Length: 507
Image (cartoon, rainbow, N blue to C red; front, side, top):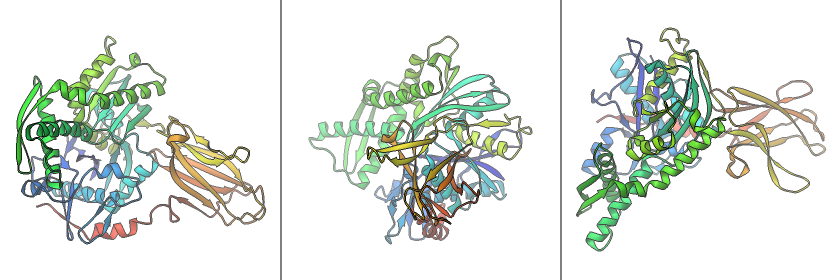
């Protein structure tokens, strides 16, 4: 069985191709009517509770120490959680527990073994973040066919479901934890990404926090002092804020009045949609600025876009659609929702079929052409000025895959190694993210001006690989590439044993 996995910040889904040639979601093993797994984990001894069972446990004890929003920490080196025994958990391991749970659900429902998967990633994820997703899948023992960007997956499903061809699409993907935007062209033979952008720390979480601040302000006015915020009350505030946001976004609903309980204090909260929209105006402006920059990067104008697809749960906030309809006003332009919570998972299943060579079987566009989301370069130090600069090797928005060769030279007599720091960046040195050091050597004949040919490849899944050769003989040289001496994987051995020894408790 091949599957598509939407590994989301707040909810995760798993899908496969159905017998009718359309993708279908697979349900929770404990609840056949539930298809969305909350991306939340609670660790207790050697057991891991994942998904809705954690939400149920929180109803009984809101003070439980749960792990949320681990996806935002992919690519970071530090642990994000310590369990009761003081054992560190990295984001990859927590993600692996969610993937193990999804795998269990899929195999239980279909009575077949999961053979491979396509996993979705935000379009703006850089190389360390994408490799963290691959590491999470490896820890969960799930073979990965490939990665697909979330907006691209949504656009692929839209194009197949609506039989749309020869269109320029803009996918505005406002999820629970991240914001993505992608411009692409779609026709019967190919999906072509033109440009992409996004923000890791912009999503439904920030909208909920805006509601939460409004709730706390009303508690302060009603009680004369703010409610004491501890783990329990913060959980209660998070749940109340999310519920208020959803209710306030219902059609025709402009005001909400609701009794909110925080700890042992209760206040009747009154919220107005206009106040909420004013509170989140800066967040939506930030998303709109990224959207317009993405269109500009594609060499287009807003009027050149045929269709704007709103996907992700946070796109259901009415102010999102209102802003997009005010921005895109050309006659014939459409701003529409397309399976906001399901399209990404459906598209992942379709892409799995593409990669498996089944495009004809399911009448899918056989070609997929992505672009680089970041430039890749080598950080250098000018001997003349002493300033740090970046020698760009791969530019942003180049068609994938792309391989570029460049020759570097040793600078000292008897130099037996050369060390190059590779970075990714969107605009310039100020936002550069280190991919790690390429350490080449020992060289067979150390000397000054020894030429070393470095080949940098940005692969179709958006990850970066580097190789070094003796440019005179073409022989590959001894090398290590990564953010640590072992290639950045020093913590994964212990995390692998940790994940394997942890039992997924479905309640």
